[in-house]
Image 1 (cartoon, rainbow, N blue to C red):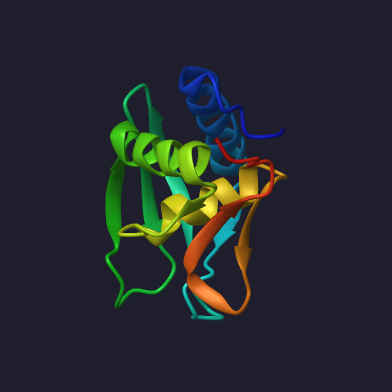
Image 2 (image 1 turned 120 degrees about the vertical axis):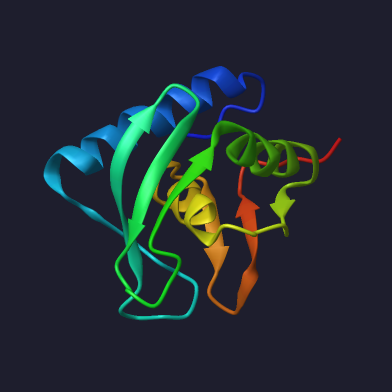
Length: 120
């Protein structure tokens, strides 16, 4: 699916659907944060949050990602074409995994790009 710049609720439903599918098959969401052995498993999908468990035990372990964290990244992407606020790298990992036009630059792990951005 392409990132919808007008309807965050549609984007959120898509993320939740994909996360639930990943949870159902036990798929690992690979991490781009520099660890080749990193990644997260989805352990719960709720209407206002998605809970994940880190593959690396020394990492943050189990945590829940609020819908508002996904909204902030989406808002950055649709307003500027880039998100530079990757406090929770797994949020970026999910955008990269679930939307075909959202990518990470392999040379810059601190930015997430939306290829569909055409400026204001």
